[in-house]
Image 1 (cartoon, one colour):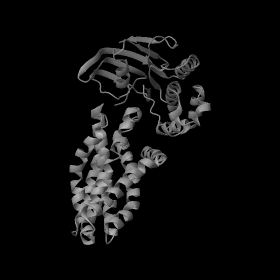
Image 2: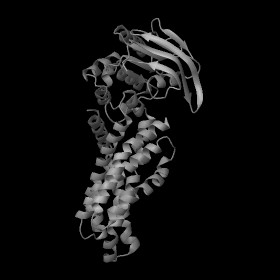
Image 3: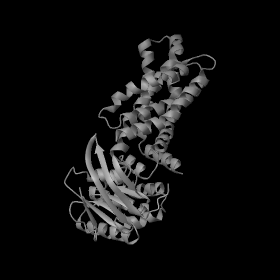
Image 4: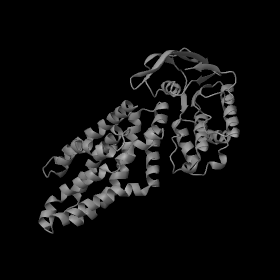
Length: 208
Length: 193
């Protein structure tokens, strides 16, 4: 099946460059490590803001791979070859989204305990569950921004302006400590993930 | 809508880039085994014509009737630098739903067999061009759209290209090639843009 072929291809290429997979995660941990220095060693304050810090760190980390997500495939003719074969760009974008999410979220969740220790987070499980639900949306928004800026020089800087406002619902429900917040997080994540392949494909078509 | 035709028919075709008309009134009919050699000055719209035929750019006016599976070798090789040439060609053959064994014969047809185990990133530009042509040959598509297929090829590789085009046409395939001058396509229709 073409979708699985494309996902496997993207994962194979990603594993060839482990540095590119590690970079967002290292950045994620570094941002989390900044806060104890910036806020001071008040353990109660840190534990209180920890979920928000982790989410902001994850959001910022999700912006790092934007410039390598779509632009190289557009520049080297890969996307042309996909289109010539009659493969829908939506299929291509969905496969890229799945592969990118795996390559982004799995290392992030592995690094989460490190960030949790740095921030003195009391319990890990709710945050890990929230991130597991929310990272598909972060990966999708990165892909959307990458598709919108693929033909632009310095598109990565613009990507932040595109992603951050759209990520607000995910951030709000991810940090919220109210009953039902997880469901709303899952819902907003689902909407973003479902719409992104279509939006990304439309952006790529419009750019040609 | 069924295409009750066994030919690639282009009628009164026009294309635009950036809101400016590149060409208009282009028409040709090419049946199985035929070839069209597209010539013209730089900027005349040769590559644009191929991209329109490939479905990468919209048709501004006119029509294209193409009942065949079509493949394109453009200026970009679409080879990733890391994987070996063999795995790159195999990947595209899978997307083409072509038999992966065709990759070996297509690679042999372009003298790429000794290079199959090398990372695609270390290939020279002529070798990358040959790899792109081998991908076209392995695709099993009936219509080959070739954009300056001889660019960067040495004399021996040009002979391989000529032979591959002749073999493809002999098997009932169609070739539309953008060229500057003759590349040994036998008895082509000539289209000047």
